[in-house]
Length: 97
Image (tube, rainbow, N blue to C red; front, side):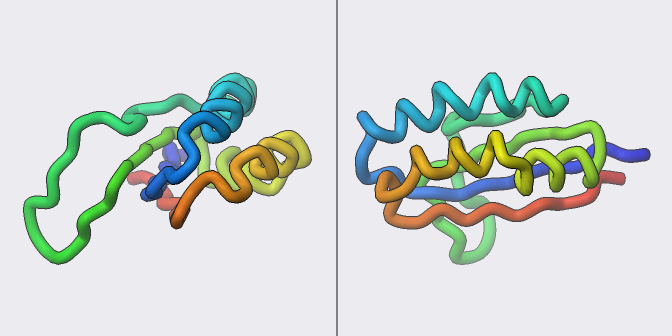
């Protein structure tokens, strides 16, 4: 079974409220077997038109573990903390090799 990755791009417009989401999300990710590989760190576009404001990359032990985390009640409640804090929030789940 290969790892899976959640890749997120976002633009935060309410940093203070978003901090509550980040504080709750981190332990939930860890409890689900996930880990942050990149979280808002330095980045640059090397090709194409993609100009994300903030990028986050998480690794989970499997695709199923990542889906279970995302679809679960715990993260469902945590997502409510994010409501209204971002201009956009795009997330994709990618199966690893």
